[in-house]
Structures are given as C-alpha cells and as structure tokens.
Length: 387
Image (cartoon, rainbow, N blue to C red):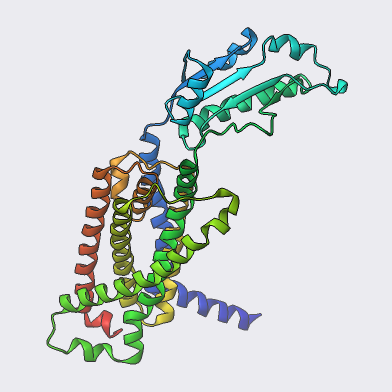
C-alpha cells in the first residue's frame, strides 16, 4: 500500500506541477463556460416568435379557451379554406384548423365501442416555418391533453390520405440541410485540420528539423503565414473530400423517400458557402498550429486538440436547435458559432449580407491575431526548442 501511495503521489505531482498538462485540464472547462455564458446571454435577448396568424373553421365555443396563451398573440384570419391552405404553404399563414360541423355534440355522444369513425380535427401547418411548427405543436398538445380527459372521443389528423404538412419539397430539403450540414461540415473541417496541423510544428520538433527551417534567411512572420496557408489548403482538400462524400450519401442517410433536391441553390449560394468554409478552415488551422507549436510532441499536440474538438462539437450542436439563423449581430462575433449560424443562413436561403460580412471579418481578425501570436512563438527559443 505504501508503494501505491508513493506512485500515486508522484503521478499527481507530475500532472499538477506541469503547466502544460494543467492548462489542458482546466482551459477547456473555462472556455466552455465563457462561450456558453456569452451565447446564452445573447440568445436570451434575441427575438422569439410570439405572434401567430391562424384560421379556425367550425370552432366550438368550448374550445376558444385554447386560443389564449400568456405572452402570445394569436390572430384569427377569415378567408376561404383553399386560400388559407395556400397561405400556409407560402408561410404567410401559420396554421389552419378545421372541425367537423357540430363537432362538440358529436364528440359528447361518440361511443368508441361502436366502431364508428370518431369526430375529426384537421390541422394544416408548414414544418419549414418556425412559427407554424410552434403554434401547431401548441394546439396539438392542448387538444391531445383535452382528449385524454374525455376517453379519446375524437381524432386529430386521422386520415392517412391527407397531407397535413404543407411544406414543399424544397422546404423539406432546406430543413434537412440546415439541421444536418452545419454541424457535420464544421466537424469535417476541424478534423481535416486536426490531423494535419497537430503534426505540422510538433512533428518538426520531434524530427529535429525545425532549427534548420528557422535559420534560413526568411522572416518568422513569412514562415508562419506560409505554414498557415499550406496547412489550410491541405486541410481544405481533406475536408471537402469528406463533405462531397456526405452530400453524395445524404439521400441514403435521411432515407430515399425524402427525394432531396438542390434546385433552389444557385451559384451565389455555393460561393457564400465556399467563403465561410475558407475562413473557418483558416481559423481552425491557426488555432491548431498554435497548439502544435506550443506542444513538445505530436502526441501532446493531439492531446491539446481533443478538448478543442469537444468545444467545436458542442458549438456545432447548437445548429440543431433551429432551422433559422440567429438575428443577434453580437453572436456573429463568436468564433465557430458565427460560422455555424452563417451556414444555416446560407442553406436556409435567408442569409443576411451584414451577418455574413460580420462573420468573415471577425474570423479574419482572429486569424490575423493568431498569425501574430504564432510569429511571436517562432521568435521564442524557449517554445520552439522546448527549453
């Protein structure tokens, strides 16, 4: 037992007295706290949907109590059913609810054991619209809760032959793409950079070739920029190869019945995606190259990169929360998160040029600062030669 205690003490002393190891343990938690605190504060201040336009046909008086929700404004529209359905499809109306004539009386006298068809409620919505989905989910919840109290005396959207979700094929494709691609693309970009950048400088240190490179008559800043560009190009090729494979397999991933289409995306969309991808890759490359320069070995550099990857994944997951990009300009100053939101904006065809420009410029600033830090690190013999 005494020897176990000695070994335990020795190992813990090594971990908690080595500044590099200590930083790798503590910094990820601090970064996650700071990042999510800032994002949470701004997201709470962002505008949320509180106004809804709906049309209800043959609504029983007893059900009008469901139209009042604290903090929401529900406006009833009057038009023909066909026009209302067209408006839901075009996202100018959020929801259409139709009750059978004399619905309430039929419901009260319905006997489930009779085998007759239960009174019907039909709700038409557009899943590609955030407002439509919200108000649809609300009415579905309250009506299902009410139905449970009266022993299931009516059905909601009970006909298998009627399409109640009026989102068109392009809307469905956009919803799938904005949900999946930003997260997956960010992960592919980071992992593409991670394998290459972790070896870039730390590998040179292990092989003993870093000194030869630095004694050449080349400015350290030029050396840093050249390294960054070369690593970015290599990482971009690796990331794009993965991304192309993802796009090719996406119909099988989501199911062939989805019948995905890319017809709504033009050249401008792909150019915007390319710009976001390039600045994001450059940012990842700078961060990972700094970690590689700080590390003594490739293994240590990879160890530093793993917590960063966890943070990137956590930020990428935020793209699943909405198929619409945030409208808070301050969030476009947060690295990685701004790229995720810009990708959502581009893929949802609702991108703001101001937000896109803010994303690009903020990342360029971070990249410039990173190159400056990297240059200073190259000028430090203590860091480069692990003294």
